[in-house]
Length: 506
Image (cartoon, rainbow, N blue to C red; front, side):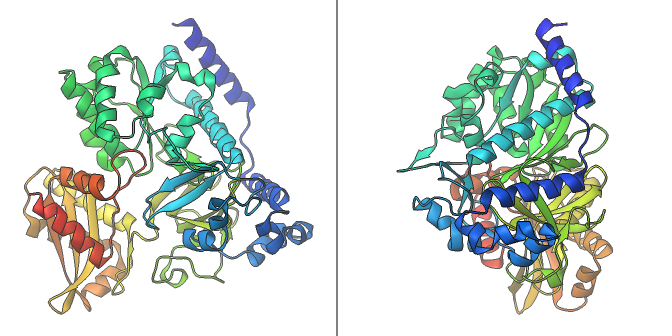
């Protein structure tokens, strides 16, 4: 047993034992009060009378009554645009050094402020994840192995008074000095902006590293592993990284990638989910006997929950004003909610765009179920991505296949509405049978869809293309690697453009 690994493991075990679980309700109220106190003299705080909210008998209720719900476009147009112009004390005290760029799926391009307090909060949340490793069965020497973090370039765009980049790049650019000993691919490779060049350099250097864990979005990690295996003529990645034990996923659900990922491994890994978005580090998996993540309730983010039902959401996928919004204390298990956050980066009652399900309220554990704009309700079908994922899983089991990417849309053609799925798979399938499987599964699991199929929605069609075509589209129209995600749902115009592009690659 390596001495350093043993010391670190003992330290983690000790800290994990003495750091008791916080009371989520009390922690969340304390976080909101801290946010309000610190921001009460900002332009936003004075506009919405934070001082009076703090003096009220029920600050949480007063906050919800006084401050409206914001999506990105509204918060940017009314407040955050002034930060880009160099103004200070707008939604959070002080100026603004970093903006996280995101192509997103709820707006074409987003500039999310990342304050010094948020960077500090992300580091603290990272430590919570490290401390939770005591719950997993890991050898002591794991704690002295290197950590490969596949993210966006740390070469940030330098403007007059601030820097811009993706959140993974900003976070990597601010890692503490002591962590550099463990961090791979290292500062030089991490600064490379071209995805193909970055992966080529990683593959060249990979045999000299001793990697214990990998973190990154599943689709891009899988592409990287394939390139390393190919360039180094390996059977599996464990041929050069025998001490690889952990994969930390984030950004999208890991399950669709599990089977294909494990083909690249010599043995299964410990899989840990995290919820790190441009707006902050929201949750992390803290125990091995679940695939849910624990909300980080005591570190600069106040959470609210909007029941994800049609009457609460407008046609653009935004939360309506004036509807009931719940705190963590009020929310219920096994119910789908739109997540709102207020943060130390000056986001207030901000609709991040994700929907979640609380799986264990006592532990504050959630699962991400989809996106508010990854929600089809053109003719009353009211389909969330969660229901679509269930149908895709049924398709996979029926055909013994893998579908790592798909895009769905409800379109109007030949004077009728149809739902269409483009799926990414390397297996030839009977698309008529595939359409029947998905249609039946959606009908069985969603009564609104079943009713729509008897009225306006006249059919469902599936088309299959190689999954590489999805990544080619991402490279040309979004961004390959980093935080880029392929949307599950598109509006009709965007879907038709996407479909035409991937079909012409065949």
